[in-house]
Image (cartoon, rainbow, N blue to C red):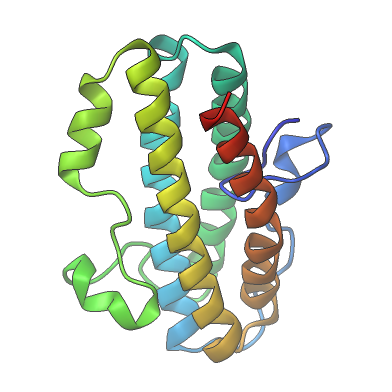
Length: 180
């Protein structure tokens, strides 16, 4: 089973299916903008992590999952960036990450955890990597719940709903990999 983005899916055929495809030209509010900015930062952090897997992981299934996550996350970042650009809004977070706690907070993975991941090798890398991806799932759910509750843009809300739906599959797969 391949995964899409940080949310996973039961459809193994196309990891890019998680890519948001809606047009976000409709009305938007500050919560939509904040959500997309935070999810871009979240997905970029995910990309930083998954790009370590090809050279660091000893497990083929972890490398395969990381490749699928990389493909989907790259597409998601491009789509969310295009929405913010169309709205003439910055694509990066403004101010310190911890000032965004009301929107789900950032970062899910701090500098110390990233250093530990970069230094880990073999099975230690795999365990650290999978655990950090699990923590990112929690963060994505928190941010998406806020968007669903407070956002107004239909495309951003649909994307948040998709993240929520894909997360349970991703968590199940990550736990399976951790326990195997």
